[in-house]
Image (cartoon, rainbow, N blue to C red):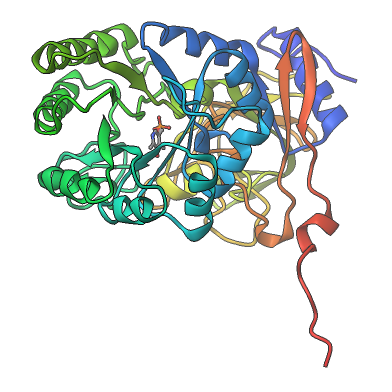
Length: 420
Ligand SMILES: *Cc1c(COP(=O)(O)O)cnc(C)c1O
């Protein structure tokens, strides 16, 4: 049934078709080798903490845990996931699970207290809420240094336009709030988006130094946060992780010597560890010409991958031809099945529809949307009563189903028609 495709990647071609055959489409496929390679790049940091919100499937968390990566949780559900994946709540020298958020909802506060989880506070009032329930603990503060950087307004995590973190001028006030409950500030955290821009990074390190000196010798750790970008487009520069470490390590060493204490240096990547490891396999279900535009409509939509409609994000795409061979290239608009005109994978920020040059394809061919491992499956929804996609992890040359495709019964579970 399958033939080698024009790029000569027979093996990959066969495996994409056989994965689609076995597990159906749309299908997320993760490559464990790429995740492990990315983890190794951070070996110089004392602690690598995975921001699980980027890709929180239990099997991915288990892989992280087996590979020595600790975890960050931003909700009660993510705390439960971390526990379900085998992370331990005990407070070691390097706590395995940290709760980071700008609020405690009631369930998250209950869980944090129940398991004595360390909290990275993103709002001053969290110190009081925690102090009333768990006096005498240590907290880390997520600091908003007053400036930001990010690939879109929606991902910029610093500055007055961002809701995240404790404003940098309120550190003394937070220390005072903590003191009322015997709470000490043991760590500082700055996650403000960024990536390849070393000029910006040096500003962040400088802000960290200023804030850390204000906190003083109760500090045990500093965290560089996440925000490392990945090359989504061919030719985009990869983050120089070694240079990133050098800069943060210099800050750590300088602070350790000024404060006269050892300091742990943490990094907290989400996207960087998983983005390139994941791809979304979809089947082409319609090809149609509409005026000047040729449309390829596939069986995945923004219910499966929301980054294009949310941020105008670019994802690499590739066609696998099933029963034909052509190396003709065509400019196409790629869209999904949803009854919503924004359900287009080839769009730019602001919703402007663009085209992509792909090999000519027919109904039944596969379209692979690459670099989809981060903020892909986790942002899936049931819009249009579509099931969440199945997910597969390839490890040791075996494809493991790590999330079964949702059934209709699972989608409507919990819905009730009132009986009068
Ligand atoms: C989202 C998040 C991260 C990871 O961000 P990436 O851009 O995916 O690296 C790290 N830390 C915290 C607290 C986050 O909320």
